Length: 301
Ligand SMILES: Nc1nc(=O)c2c([nH]1)NC[C@@H]1CN(c3ccc(C(=O)N[C@@H](CCC(=O)O)C(=O)O)cc3)C=[N+]21
Image (cartoon, rainbow, N blue to C red; front, side, top):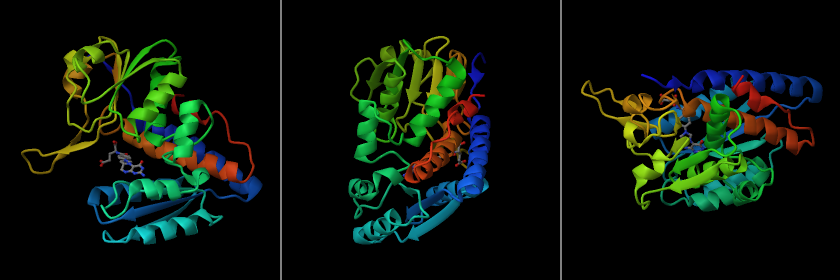
């Protein structure tokens, strides 16, 4: 194996430690405790694990965490009512509604209902628009985490060719916008892209976010490229336990890439750390306090 493994777990731990310090400072100097509210609809076991992890890590960073569990069959109105209440709750600075949602609940309606200042996922159109036009809104957690890992490895990204595989509003599009902001030459590739392998082979930076287990083989990767694997796919194994794999075929990719993120232990932990970062920033903004600087650098320390 040739590639350096980019340790997202370690980078996320460093970032969370620094966030925790800033939260303690806010509490002591301004009597302000950043609060994160997480809404989970339904009983999906994987989602329950994520939500529990988010709440635990928020508390470990000295934040307040509020969890709301609604039944799978909940009417959309009930979800919107809860959001309206949290929008007006001064103890809540960030609201996250775990996706996906059941069919009777329209995700766009729900996202639009969250006050954009409390939209720590960065999914609200106001925040998506700010990212696209160079404003300073909330940046979606997964792309932000990916960017930190890229800077950790590469420093300045200016002029590099970046290919983003996947065009979702949650990862692909905001990832491309962030890389453009860093002055990369950005290509968004997707299921209709012709000569997908050739597009990928041009990439100095390849971000895979398609949700297809091990879709990207090593021979799609430019030698020395930096590969960020956003995929978290559970696959069956002969022992029946199953395991997590990314969108990239790790073993063959690691023979070619200069650096690569593992799954698990890559992008996932950074996503949660960035969620805490956004909650801290949201709390500061809502109270007219300066946003602590230099936190992102903590991740690539
Ligand atoms: N509104 C909303 N915001 C989200 O940010 C959001 C969401 N909905 N819905 C679901 C996805 C998924 N997601 C993950 C975050 C961390 C890990 C993570 O830390 N994964 C560990 C492994 C965890 C395990 O072992 O299962 C890792 O990659 O090392 C995974 C998945 C956030 N999501």
